[in-house]
Image (tube, rainbow, N blue to C red):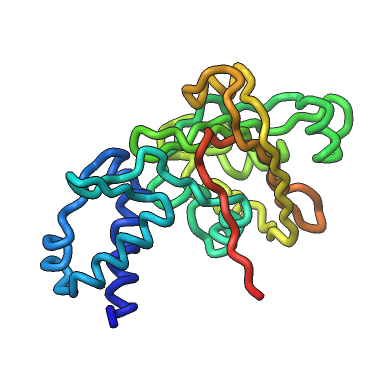
Length: 240
């Protein structure tokens, strides 16, 4: 029997390199023999690990070798992000980078004002950003925060590279708030012009759009709107 421990380590190793962008779509993996030598593993163990990655759509095999799939997965959901925040980790998935395209205090649209229970003329923080892994754009998002948070977390109005990482954690630490409730809503629809431009898609391309609301007894801490490009996957684990 192949060793489950070694099989898992090999699969995790290549999965993490693909998710981080170190191995980009189309990149060729070492041969099975090379992997077996590197890990001092049996051929059956290597085959089992690669089969698992192929089932998960991370890799594809051809007579010429094994390659990273052309459609990499994006699996971090708002629920997963909440777990990372509660563990004081980055809002972004492992290996993702982000670019903030707007960060401002504005009077929000009516529906956002109602979500935050604001009075007419009250402002909120609005941050618009793109995330990617390697050359692949994985998500286009807008996140909203109560305006008073801007005085406590200067990076809420900062568009400098790298300042999006761990921002949700810094908000919780600075405000002393704790997320006690989270809700996700998702639906598939055509991309509008702004979303298509951000994700590099034709207008009308199918996207998975979603929103998340993170709150406590005092109200909304963070409200987010986001969309994923076609053929990406979002998933949850369930415990029986």
